[in-house]
Amino acid sequence: MALEARGVTIRFGGVVAVNGLDLDVRQGEIVALIGPNGAGKTTFINCVSGAYVPQSGRVTWKGGDILGLTPNALGQRGVSRTFQNVASLHDLTVLDIVRLGRSLGRGRTERRSLGLFTTRDPLAEELTETLLAPLGLADARHRPIQMLSYGHRKAVDLARAIAAEPELLLLDEPVAGLSSREAHELADVIRGVRERHGCTILMVEHKMDVVNRTCDRIVVMAAGSRIFDGSSDEVQVDPEVRRVYLGEP
Image (tube, rainbow, N blue to C red; front, side):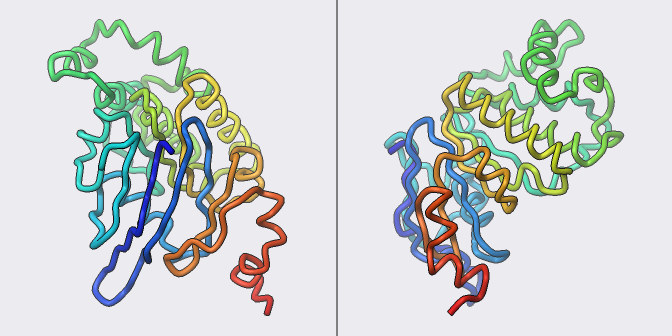
């Protein structure tokens, strides 16, 4: 397995947000992590991405323990993520933000990172053609992100994460708030990222049409625990999943 989580437990005061979670993602696989609000999905992603440190358990990426590493250290190990809520980042342009993502990727030294922000940046054309154009952002590359629609800001956040050239991409509700057309277009981009770069993807998402369009496997969480792991066909008939989502006895 490329990503392995064993017995991950995270508490906030008396609330158990993630309860002894075991989860595996194979190299090059796209796995959806779904469940009701409050199931612990984003909390787990925050754990893997270095925002939280669990009280117990272990998470490894390609055999190395990654719990407690900073986002910068994780970036050097090929781990990148998007966020559920996209910040405006003040007056940074779309291209600036994608450059920032590239600067945090594997093998970036401080000198090379600073070079990404010069006016004669040789990577600008490459980033525009390979990342911004497929997301419909090429014409907006010099616009401040705060001037873009919510859907376009979500796309910029995805471009930033992909710019780091990740081997493990963590997506937290990447199509939340988007129209059906925008969501399906972004889902196709996500699959394209896997096809082109071979990266492993763990995606938190609520929209099942996007999950079915994008993912190879589905893991369902409820009350901090895993209650299902299987295919999109199997999840629709699983009795425990139907009980949690539909209230069936």
